[in-house]
Amino acid sequence: MRNRPVLLGGILLAVLGSLCPFLWFVLTSFKSQIQVEAIPPTWWPDGSLAFYTSALIEQRLFHYIRNSVIVAGATTVVALAVATPAAYALARLRPPGKAWILVGLLCVAMFPPIVIAGPVWQILERLGGLNTHWGLVLPYVSLTLPLAIWILTAFFQELPFELEEAAQVDGCTTWQALYRVVIPLAAPGLFTTAILTFIYAWNEFFFALLILTDPERQTLPVGIALFQGEFIMPWGEIAAASVIATLPLIVIVLLFQRGIISGLSAGAVKG
Amino acid sequence: MTQSTQNRTTGRLMVVPALMVVAVFSLYPAMDSFLLSLYSKFPGPERSFVGLGNYLELFHDPVAHQAFVVTLGFVLLSTTLELLLGTGIALVIHERFKGRGWVRAAVLIPWAIPTVVASQMWRFLLNDQYGAVNAILFGDQVDAYVPWLADPWMAFGAIVLADVWKTSSFAGLLILAGLQVIPDETYDAARIDGATAWQRFWHITLPLLKPALLTALLFRTIDAFRVFDLVFVMTQGGPGDATQVLQFYGYKTLFTEGRVGYGTTISVTVFVAIAILSLFYVRTVGTKLMQREPA
Image 1: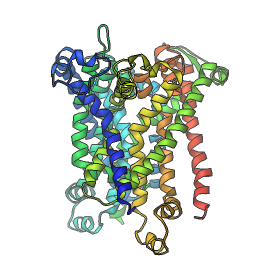
Image 2: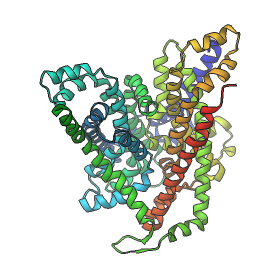
Image 3: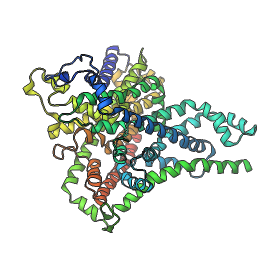
Image 4: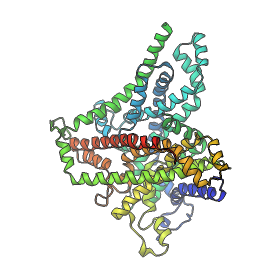
């Protein structure tokens, strides 16, 4: 594509198309109630923070934020702790049935959530995990493991083998070689996997809706989906809550755009 | 020798926790669902074996038929649009230009936004009174404002639009990965021969891009079949049953109406439909794509 005007047009379309719809929500969040209810709509907000205060205090957004941080954080830590040794073993130690394990994981990743939701609900009911954060973290870990293991296996396979061999000659066990040599080298890959896992758990709605029925425990997506006003839809508060829920993700994307792109294509294309 | 046996044992130990979690929270539940779909079951301990009775009922259930048609229409329409837009996005962010990192980040933002947020956003954009879409189309002519989500066809179009907005960039990333493995030299000969940009795209890029396009098609199809959040937030399956996709119908039957056996049957059917369509793509489209010579 040497055609500058066409490229420029493409860039403009892609950027505006991606950002404008959400910008409207951002503008809405800074409006006053009168402005939100204006027909025809007003474009420019008067910079009111009323929706933020009422979302945070009256709609108890703080609870949802705290719950989301706990669930997404715990999911990321546990998923990485379980996926890292598994991916290392798959990349290096050739356990029996390696190919089957990788293909099987890919198939599991394709299960529609609803086909596992009912039995998962029953397992959690028996374990007392309904309406608890760990009851949501466990299925999240299971759902994020396939992608995490795929990405990490791809990363580990690209690392040179010699350093670990040298470490093992020096008397390190496999575990020590993993923690002292491989993990520091694979830090970018681990970080990318952590980000993708975090985004998944932060955004997930279906299981959160089923498992957390107690408003005290619900995560941000459930809160935002079920936002209720007394008489009319509280669009201003929904917009403010949406901006707050999205802000950390925008920061992550701006900072780690490169890692996310390589991680997603490693998980999908190298397979 | 001992080193290698020890490695083998350690290897097993390292894989087992991951496999255990997946077995308990994904594999076992899926198998349990298959089994449960053969029973008539409601909340409570009792259940009675009905064989394929639930599937027969599903076969004659007009609501399920409608849901199947809506789901299939949604999958075909949204994945087609996403592949087209995704290819465009990939071509743009593959180019080298100043500020490309920012453009890539901007394009990724819809992908990163929670689906629930994107759904509320589009619901508000399409609002019959306060929505930006009506304001842009009709300005001050308030009488002309359209209640988009109250019309069956428009509501269907709205969930497709929201899905396309949210996930085209993901398709774009997978296609970008395909573009990146095409060596630059491939284009040089064509350029010397005087091929136009369009000819180079059609005769060189597109044929070489087919594996990446197929990957994107597979991933997007599997995901589109599982659409739930958009429908739950934007339309609740309405108006009427116009946007009731199978996954939402299954959810309602299983968790709202408590018809556990029948709801599970719907969910298993979604599962089987995904498997069949994926196999079809890989077998038919996949091999055709691989075999067809670039013209």
